[in-house]
Length: 394
Image (tube, rainbow, N blue to C red; front, side, top):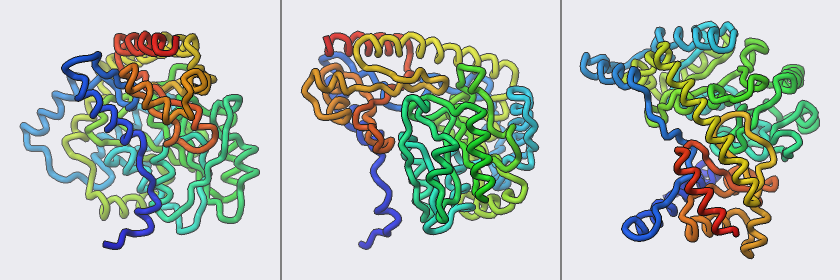
């Protein structure tokens, strides 16, 4: 069977490959040694709060499960619009919001709407691997630009300007970012968007961790810049609905019918049950619970990252959002006689029974010396992992 060139361009998602290996090892030790501590997957340990679960059950009980329009329930689009106004003080008309089958569908729709074969999209290195694969699936080319800790592992306007060429179509950024948990300073983001606009390009911004910002300087949506910024968001992270597969896309008015046409053909509509459940995310009781959980994520970050630094797994930039720690393991590799973070991840898995994610997925700019820890697990799990790592590296 002949496989398409497009499919062959898509590399394995090593995060999931490592997860499979960790799960297999966990099964082997389940009845004997210490259980595996999983700090490798970026998934909140919290599930959807009570009102959201009740709304889903009610939708099923009442038979409210038929197709919605491809852009999503009008009521949900209005709720999202109101959330932008109350949370960020930014007016985003509901007509510009397209509800999608997760942020993944939002990224796919945006890329298919804007990227032609051979177009280049500039992205920071390191960055979330699936984002570059969405560009590739649209027959475009993701161009990874190396970043440094001094730049918070984010692109600058100067680097965007320097990398721009006749094939460049735009930028795809993430703020806060996976794997680093760092955000772009609002002033620098404006400068990047000015460069992109002057060049006739598009600014795509992955904001799926925006609700989990811990610093008011960075906890702002880019939609306040102008109505040409395209934002991708999700109910998975802040709203704790990972498996519900629901997200949204904010686009300029002119792009709404284009995205709607694509969504009609590719997805029909997002999950109806998930949409009715998500309406309850914006109730005062739910928001209060989400804010309590956000404070818990911050407490975990504030405890765990100093622990990593103390045992030689240095986190060069304190993350201002999300729930990740991007740690330099080169010192630990040297101590253990290991080649890189890939070997380190498997060594930690075998010896400490802690699952972490090696940097291989996230680019090529020094990523071989970094591992990503997820701090989305409970404080007890983080404390156990830190103790095991400290013992292993003593």
